[in-house]
Length: 125
Image (tube, rainbow, N blue to C red; front, side, top):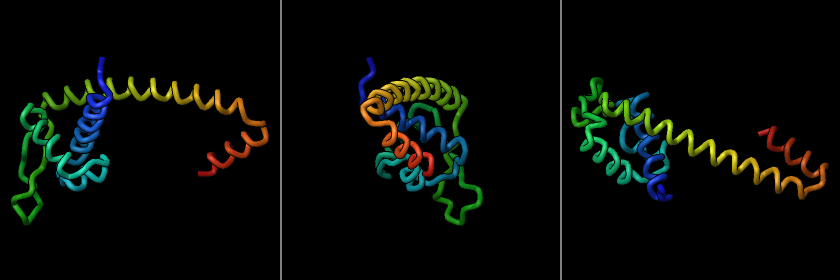
């Protein structure tokens, strides 16, 4: 059984790999903002991804500061991302089904006119 902590760790790894595949030159600070974790947390995850051989460092081609790096997914990293994608999607779809069922149960407790107002408000966002 996967613990909640392991699920969160996998989610962060998945999101970081996904972002890096789209933009290998993202800074750790930008990754942290996009994923919603600390910069130190991103550094820890990237270090683990480097150690596992899922990501390799490349030079940041256009930077004047040659200390900046690009984080390039390796073939092993691309395969790991595909596996994480399947698990992430399976988990999120199950969460969605549970949430939808809970919404339907709670909505049944409201009068139809109140429910219509809530639906109209949520569709307006």
